Length: 263
Ligand code: BTN
Image 1 (tube, rainbow, N blue to C red):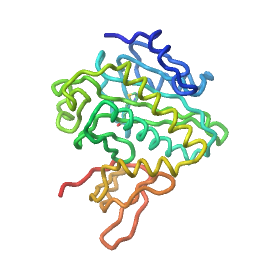
Image 2: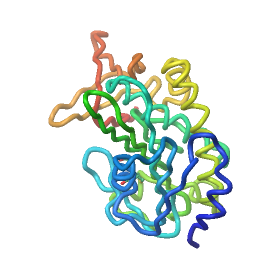
Image 3: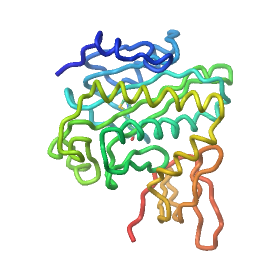
């Protein structure tokens, strides 16, 4: 079933997030559309939603599987008055907000893998891609793209992801309303964003750490051609990943792909 744009807009009652809804049945990427709307002056809180993406983007130049009729693909336009270096903190904030929304419908623990993959039982249910636009050295807009696997079933996943990805339906044994989830998501995003604007990153960091899937685990982190291994040692005040080597020396990693090692 398609989204009913009018009903959905009337249910998005937050002051900021979802104050405007831009819905298109098919887009290449909601992040691309949101970036274009942001450049055209779309207000903070505008949500771009699509039923299907033909070129859904993932982190690190990957693609995001985006079939019609079953999942959520959305991008939120933010215009925070923060230094460009702090934009990465919004990525973690989004992870916390979406984890809370998912937890409202799924009794299993929803964990976060740095920077912001949401996992249920170790499988990825949601990915978040944050992209910023800077103008004259300042942030003009931050686009938070969220892909949440809602009603996809195992057989629908690309074979390469079948064992590592999951959906809410697979985890809870029932179908979920995408509309209800979108409303929930905006409802959880708004207070976290306001906390961040008023009190900074510290409260977000605390909640993120409480959901960290990596606590006590060994990690392998790949960035470009470099591989680093070590014990998860938290995230710092900027949201960078900290890993400790055998000697206890702590390294700071600002971007990359982390794998949780078994055993
Ligand atoms: C990742 O885990 O690699 C991030 C995936 C982000 C996918 C979402 S779907 C909505 C938005 N539009 C995109 O093109 N990508 C993000």
